[in-house]
Amino acid sequence: MEERLRLIGETRYHNLHPFHDMLHGGRLTKGQVQAWAINRYYYQSSIPLKDAIIVSRFTDRLIRVEWRHRIEDHDGAPESEGGIERWLQLTDGLGISRDYVESTQGILPATRFAVDAYVHFVRDRSPLEAIASSLTELFAPQLHEQRISGMLEHYDFIRPEIMTYFKRRLSQAPRDAAFALDYVKRNARTPEERALVCDALLFKTQVLWVQLDALYHAYVSGFPPPGAFRPQVEA
Image 1 (cartoon, rainbow, N blue to C red):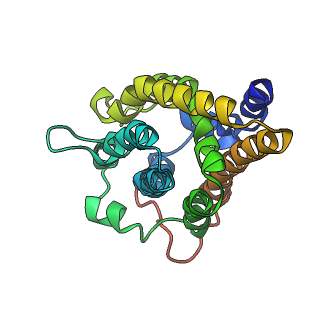
Image 2 (cartoon, one colour):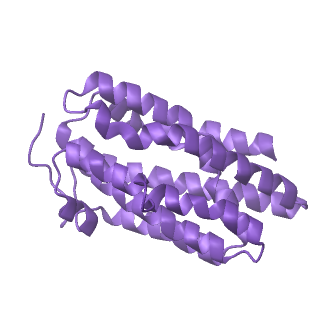
Image 3 (tube, rainbow, N blue to C red):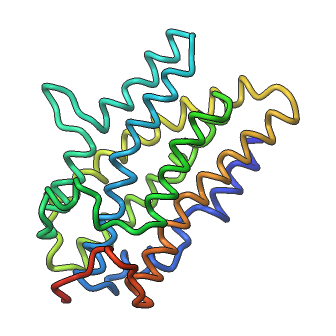
């Protein structure tokens, strides 16, 4: 099962999407990078919602204790900022109003549908599938490394201090992925359960992929839908 999971990552993870090649290779305008950051905010801000749902699915206190740190990782705590705040520092650095970003009024319809589908998935499917859907974290650190180096190298409007979200995830993602992988390996006991685990990861890769499809169609091909963010400054 683990071999199949890793094969899904190697062949389906969104690091393979051409939009990411453009983003990391310096081939996007500032307006296109802004559009990516605005839309991705909706995903980032929904992560603690889906994690709170996962916590609520378990009667096992130890699992709840382990999983709830993910909520603080993104929401923050009184003594520390979280991933959402660090993402807003990125959009601040890109020159976008926080009120506009947090309103999510400029995101693409496909972004909203895909992210909401992910939240509904962890609510409606089995707890095993809900945890399995998080296993894209297995493949995230390499993508974050590419993003940090590529964007800092190629965009003069990207400063190191606004990339802290990705730097922090370099240590958080492996920890989270290790727990989730161990959980599914211990609890997927039948061929049917192991297939559900793999299908859950496949679903999650599709959630991530379709968001980039929508960004490419709207901001590379040039067909933003009514009401979506429209870049004002091209660089």
